[in-house]
Length: 184
Image 1 (spheres, rainbow, N blue to C red):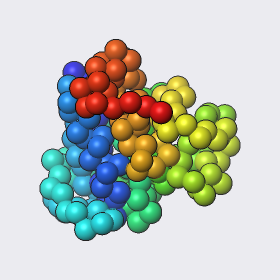
Image 2: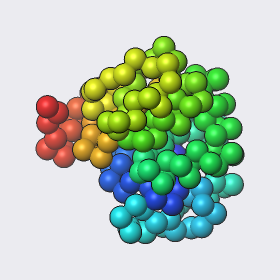
Image 3: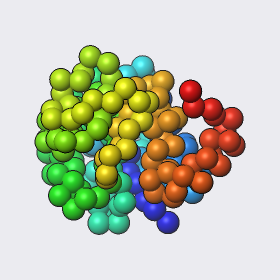
Image 4: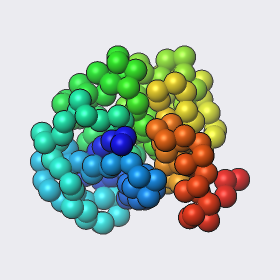
């Protein structure tokens, strides 16, 4: 079974984070919700407080197949400020292991040089943070071991791209049909 971890920082965008958790669990992926705040519960950008499965220090990164970074302006800033998480993002990139980020969070990958010569998308107006990327306007963009999404309204497409990468397009299509989702 593939395992992913979605990292939550204070100010995360609730729909972007929780849609990934929901859709990926429906698909049969093992998903951990991980706090980088040192607290078991993390507040989202719109006041939704969610209890995490693990704290950052409890994560076995060697057992993970993917790191997922949800957006939200403050959440993105808080994720990027976490040195331990950034060390793991860099290690995953060097090893060609999967990374996914949506909304403002692809800026983290851009700042770290991970998007150079890759196609990537982000929240409109944040394109300058996709340093070296070929900017995509697609809801979700997969380029090699990196998946990016544009924003909250693209959370289902982004989540299905994660499912497709880890379990195949057929499984992603089954989930899309089961949730009555049609891409544009």
